[in-house]
Length: 333
Image 1 (tube, rainbow, N blue to C red):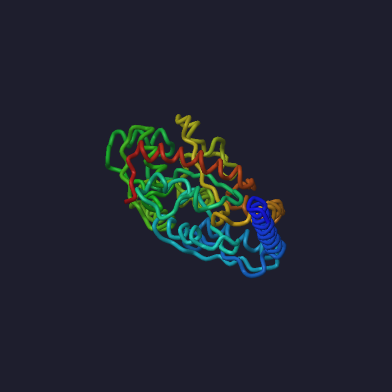
Image 2: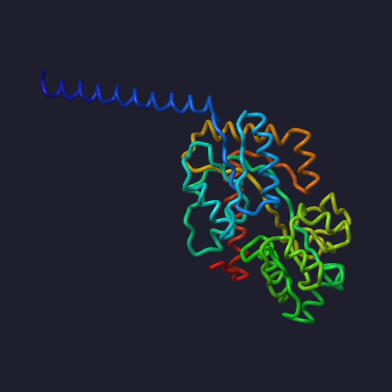
């Protein structure tokens, strides 16, 4: 056989072999997707049990367990501002059996807050679905004199450095919201970090710290019971559960709109059919009366968008938080 012809035959054999392997891989991925999930799925949350992230993970997990026929087990991996949980998922096998209950803390804030992270959001994680979001409320202790943002600012300007604002920890949304208030209002409230919302709220209720930015979902019952005063919300419109409380926009800060969101992410490389299947099932779960009512009762609004829209939300929020971090000089390391 002439040499050129032999080369053409060999090339054809290699092509057919490659195509065969390609078809085998495609068939394998398709079979995996049809069978998915065939064993329990782990949903890792970056914060402690009992918080908003845990609530979202458990409500979604229960519905997914029911609709997909396998247990979705919630696992808390706290530490390093959510970086430990995020890194755990980023380094997991991309097969759909380890997911991250993602929030804007580790996903959109930490890239601008930490000088070095053990993962890269775009390279190592794949957005699945953005499920819900909630706004923040500016809270004050019941015996702290100000009853409005304007009164708070006037008192703080007259007493620079005298009053404290509590947060859930350095680098948290609550911390950066307080720093944004300092920058926007030209005041100096001293940051006091706590290990979680409830220790911070307890000290504000007791007068050991003066104010706190807390999520509506965690704070609304404390406000309604009179244990905390709500001075303003950080949404673009008033929150229906506290209709008497103005927005920070109404209080004179037109660019003060902050919120926190919750969604699912998977390790990068997870087959797209599995991601699409998870998104479809979460969206279906969010449309049920039970979940929509449960989330509404917790001050959360349903979003339910897919991977592309979620990725864009991450991009925009990463830029927004980076500006706040730069303006405030906040650092976590």
